[in-house]
Length: 229
Image (tube, rainbow, N blue to C red; front, side):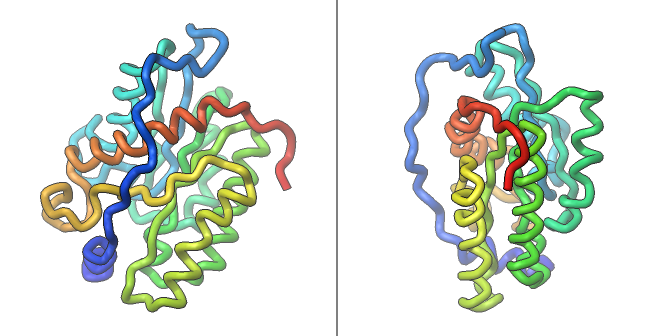
């Protein structure tokens, strides 16, 4: 598992973000006293593996949004280490029911890395993510889809099939798409834990900086209505 993850991180080139910082403090809802609720739904990269409480992705993202926004923001950690897209699909209801009847404003969907590392057919990953996005949107919740890249040792055909499923799903469902969740961190030993796999707190900070404009873009969109096909 570590060898596969290591080969993934070592082979991934760093992506240059095509966005600029946004000025001012956006208000995502008409009532600035209403809390904005975001769920980070993913695997160990979302869960904050190996980090102190509050230093993972959801904790750092919440603090950044609190600084930037005029209304309270809560980012809930629904990451499970080792999770696959199949596992995520099976626990979505549980994750949403834990909110005591509240409807989140946004789900950041980050799954697929463990699928690729285990050699799961990309078509299975695609079908699971397709179902997850459909389910989330049918509940009137916005989705930000975070992409992942397959390890090169899986071969060119697998890479092409896996890597292309994320932008295709984002286009199909018209959701905001962030191409690579580990952008700016993968393959940099200084930004990963000793296992060479999971980002350090500093690495997470870079990830949050880069995805933040996409989070704001997703929140600024109207919430979906009705069942999504």
